[in-house]
Structures are given as structure tokens and as C-alpha cells.
Image (cartoon, rainbow, N blue to C red):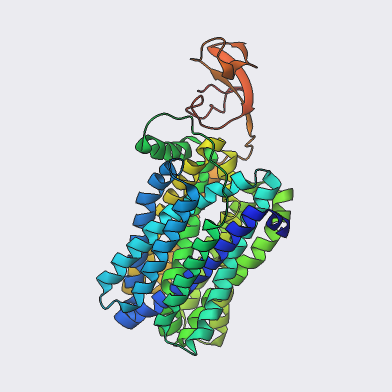
Length: 456
């Protein structure tokens, strides 16, 4: 897996991602403690609202960022977003009102909503070979996972020396380091997009791509399943640890670290596993494990706290981390397989926006329901959402899902360059190739036409 780091461009991009993630991890712990300091028992509601605002920024801004990515210098765009995030992190320790937290979170995440899809679309252009890209996806997931493991541990160590507000300084330093690394990296020019229209049309195309491609619709459902489980982790851990178990602020880092540990182990195993099994065969079983774990968490939080239930919750957090990693990591492969190269920025921006729309739904549920009905009910409701979403994905994503599809073009004229290998058939011109939604193929072929499909 580490062989992809021999590529100098990817090595710098990965280093930029890693240092920014460490800073983000420190901010996650600091923000949880800031919310608890400002709101006490209502901290979960404050966090749920703050994270919902984060998702609004992601959902609204990411598609526009993907559409603009081909028009602006990528290196300058990425570095500028890092600088904005660094500035916001420096201001967060000085807030005195909850509305100020919400405003700064929106600004911070608006910059992230621009940075992340452009970064994700750049990686497959830097590493065009699928084997290398698969390893890069696992490396990226590993970076997220190590952040979940290392940053809470670093935060716990720092909290023994400084107050939690100093953790935001580490966040700012991480973004500044990322900006320096990105600015020093020569990035490939994106392929020219063939689609006409302005920024709005390009932003809409990414969403239409997801809606028209069955495996991408299933991917969105799986993102909802992960969001349901992840919301319990990121919103309710601080209340679970501090109020239900009565443990210290450092124990919040331990719980988040358990989630990261489960994800790290899975990320290390995935490249070999994905070499033997399809994305669908890995992602669906992992997603079905999530509601099972959430049901167990509901039982554990309904009983009186003790050492055994604390250890069991840590194991549950690790299991959620492992299952979420197994669902999320192959997602980039699914997007790349379903998208023409010029459309990668729009596709990744749409995935970023739509997947975070799922979190926009589940974050408030995790926060407000926990504050009003308690953790056991919250875990059961989120488990039901996860189960329904995974079942929908299993139905939408065909078990037999070849990349090459036979189909008929009913409206392209004879002699069109796209029909070079086609032959006349009932209703148009028939041929087969790696099928994606693009300017020549506007909808998915109908599966019931005897090895062929009618479509455009």
C-alpha cells in the first residue's frame, strides 16, 4: 500500500491531507469540550446543530466548487481554502456565544466543502492506474483513521498540560502546513469537460449522474447507513462518556480513539480484500453490521453503567469504525468506475454534497433525540435508519454489475464518431463498452433486454 508514496505529487498531497486531519481531529475534541463548557447537559443539542450547519455548507457549496474546479488554478484554490480554515480555527477559542460557534463553523466548513471535492478529484488524475488508486483510497482512509486514533490521544496528552481552547491552535497549524505543501506541489491539469453550459449546469450534472446510475444510488444509500451510525459517535460520545459513565474529558478521547482503531485495522486489510472481492461484496455486509451494533449500544446504554458496559461500548465504537471504513473506502472506486475522466470533479463534488446531506439528516436526530429521549432511544432510531438504508442499497445495486454494457443509440446519426464500432439494430445503433452517464448516454440501459440495453 505504501508504494504509492513513491509518486512525488501524491506523497505531498497525502502529507498535506495528513497534517490537516491532525488539526481537524484536535478541533473535534476541542469543539466537543467547548460545547459542553458552554451548554452542559445540552451539549449534544449544541453539537447536533453545529454539525447540521456544517452539513448545510457541504451540501450547498460542494457542487459549485466541483463546477468551478476546471476554471480556477487548483493549487491556488486548495491553498486558499487551507488559509481560510486556519484563520477561522484561530478565532474559535474567543467565542462567548453559541451563535458565534455556529457562524464560525459555517465559514470553516464552507472552505472544507470547496477543498475536499477538488482534492478528491485530483488524486485519480495523479494516480491513473486502478491498483494505485485503490491503494491511495486505502491510504486516505488510513489517514482519516489514524487521525481518529492519534488526534484524540494527542488531545488527551495536551489536555494534561493546557486548556482545551489551546487545541484550536494545533488545528490552525495543521491547515497552515497543508497550505504550504499544496502550494509547493505541481498538480496535473484537469481534462477539459465536454459538457456545455455554465457553472450551474455542471453542478447539476453531478447530481444527475448519481440519480441515473444504479450503483451510485446504492452508494448514496450506504452513505446514509454510515451517517446514522457515525452521528451517534460524533455527536453523543461526549454526553455518553461525561454524563452516563461519569468519566473525565480524557475518556472522550479514548472513546473516539476506539472508533479510529477499528477503522485503522480495516483500512490496512482492505487493499488485499478488494483485490479478491467486488466492492459490493465488501460494502454491503459491512453496512448490515452497523444496525446490529447500534442495537447492542441501545441495550448497553439502557443499563446502569459499570466497567463491563464501558469496555463493551468501546468495542462497539471500534466495530462501527471498522464497518464504516469498509463501506466508505471503496466508495471512491465506485465513483471513478461510474464516471468519465472529465466529469470526475463534478462527480466527487456531488458525492461529497449528497453524502453530507445524509449527515445533515442524522446529526440533528442524534443531537436533539439524545437530549430529549435519551441515548437508548437514539441508538435504536439511528439503527433503524441504517438498516433501512442498507436494505435499499442491496435492492438498488444489482448483484451482477458489469462495467461493459450492450446498448442501443436511437438518435445518433450514422457516421457519428461514437458509433465507430456499432452496427445497425432495431431502433438505432448497437454496441458495447464501459458504460457511464455522459453526453452520449443520458440514462442507464434497461436491464431486461437480453444482454443489451436501450438507452442514450
